[in-house]
Image (cartoon, rainbow, N blue to C red; front, side, top):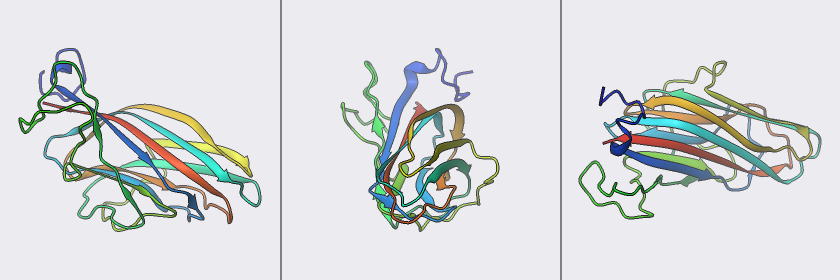
Length: 199
């Protein structure tokens, strides 16, 4: 079925492959449950999520051994997007040979980005991000859960989770801090999402 939203051979020619790469600032002292990144599909065309890569690197050691953990949930009913405490990041088109027109009929050049009015992506600067309103996560059933072992310099070096999620309009992904970050430790969080739209 052509419009099944499944990324298969019969649909691949119409797929707009996207990368949503979010890199935080130097994050420190975040409470458990604090939002650190958010991605929302604001377009009527569904957004397929193929996989999610999560990384954390400690740049300043914590004062005592610190386990870190991040959970990513699919959330619904966004009526406001994240707007405070971080940086907006535009998704990139992964330009493919022969695919040079977007859904609106506009030519896509190598390096072009998706407007923030279609996909809102936001990541922390130094602490939790705020401003979003959405249906609360089911925090005991995250789509992705990645962990760095207890250490003064914990890290999540490359946690990649293949997925098959569909984000309809006003549906998104939120990455939360799961364990309160102790004082003094600082690090960078990276969230990379591989996605597509079908033309």
